[in-house]
Length: 108
Image 1 (cartoon, one colour):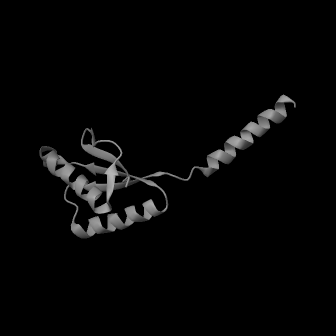
Image 2 (tube, rainbow, N blue to C red):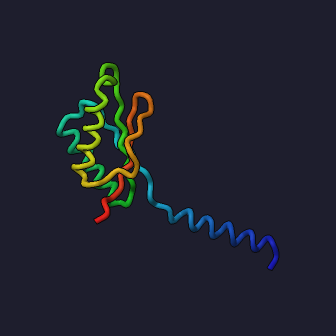
Image 3 (cartoon, one colour):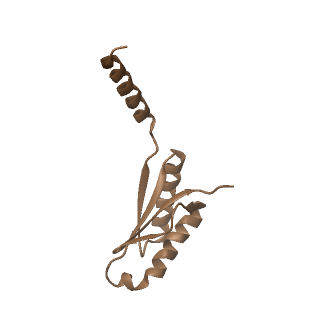
């Protein structure tokens, strides 16, 4: 087998495997004062993303005086997680004025 044909086959396999990766990380942005109806809409979005086989990343941005009440922001993330019935893939990450967390399915 010549090297050109071998290289072509490797590239073809790599492209085929790359096309199979359909799982993406979908981000849902919450805020400190997100209202009940807005949370319901975002829950429906999250359920749709999960049914399509995607992972969910929650991002909560704190603005101004909200930085003093980080505990309530974590409670907001926990409440959203509990409503979905998921668990954290890793603990809540604080990045300056933002908090983010990646969700995964609960293992039964």
